[in-house]
Amino acid sequence: MPDATPDQTDARTAALGVSADALARAPSLDSALTTILSAAASTLGAERAAIFLQDPDRQAPELAAAFGMDAGQVDAWRAALNNPAHPLVEAARTGTAAFDRPGDDGPPGVSADLPLVVSRDGVESSVGGMTFAWSATRSVDVPERTFLQSIADLAAVAIERFRLASLITERSDWFERLAHTDPLTGLANQRTLARVLELELARAGRQGGELSVALFDVDDFVATNENAGHEAGDDLLRAVAAVVSESVRLVDTVARFGGDEFVLVAPGPAGITVARRVLAGVAALPEFGGRRPSVSAGVARFPADGTSADELLGAAQRALASARDAGPGKLAEATAQPTA
Image 1 (cartoon, rainbow, N blue to C red):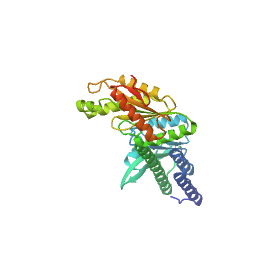
Image 2 (image 1 turned 135 degrees about the vertical axis):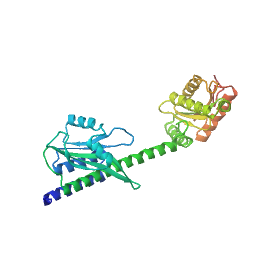
Image 3 (image 1 turned 90 degrees about the horizontal axis):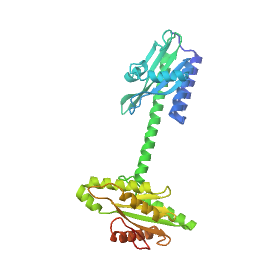
Image 4 (image 1 turned 120 degrees about the horizontal axis):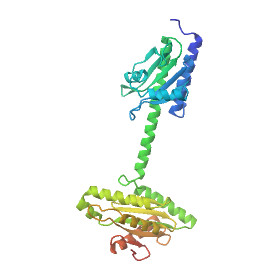
C-alpha cells in the first residue's frame, strides 16, 4: 500500500486544524460538527457523510450533521437510524469502527463507520457515530483510518464539551432560581422581595407615584395542619400561591413572606383591587382538610402609610391584624376600617 503523498498529508493536517479550531471556537454544537464533518469528507473525497448523536435522555438517535445530502437523503438517514441493526448504530453501540463496508446503496459503494467515544471517570462511553460514503470502489488505507479516528475523537470531544456547557448553564439557572424563589410555592422569597420593594420604592419616589404593599395570611392554617396533616397544609399553601400569582398584574411581584403569609408589591394605585381579587380567588378554592380556605389581608400605601420598606410592611401588618379581628376572609387598609 503506497504511503500518503505530501499533498495528502498537508490536506489532512489542514483538516485537523480546521476541526480543532471549530472545537475551540464554534458558537454551537451544530456548527462545530458541521465544520468537522465537512473538513474530513472534503479531504477524503467522500460524497456523503453524517454524524448522529446518542443522547441518554432520548431513545432514538439524532442526526446532528450531514454532508452532501439533499433533504430526501437526510430524511432517509433519520429513518434508517431508528433501526438498531444499522451498521452505523451498531458501530456506535459496540464502540468498534468498521472500514470498507459495502455502502448503503450497494456495490461498488463503500462506507466507513466510526463510533464517537468519550471517557468519563475512566469509563468509555459512546455519544454517537460518524459515517463517510463513497460511490466508487476504494479502500480506506491506514493513514486515512488514523485521520478518521482523529476526526472522530475531535467530534466526540465537541459533543462532550457542548453538553457539559449546557449542563453547567442549566445548573447555574437552577441555582439562580433557587436563590430567588421559595421552593414550596415557586413564588419569590424574602430576599427577592426585599430587593424588589426597595427598587419599587425608589421608582415611586422619583416619579412621585404610588405603591401598595398587601400582606395576606391564610386563615386557620394551623388548624388545617393539625387536623389534616402537613401535606394538606402544603397543598393549601401551593393553591393559595397559585391564586395570588393568577390574580396579579405583570408589573406586580408576589412573594412568600412567612410560613402562611404572602406579600404583594403593586406599583400604582391598584393594589387594593388586586388584593380583593386574591381574596375572591382563594374563597373559590375547594376544601382542604375539610375546611373552606380563606385569607385575610392588610394593605398599606406609599407614601401615605410609610416611605420605607419597614414602614410599609409594618403598616400592612397592623392592617392585617385589624382584618383578622374582623373575621376570616376580610381585608383592611392601613388607614381605613375593615371591609368585607
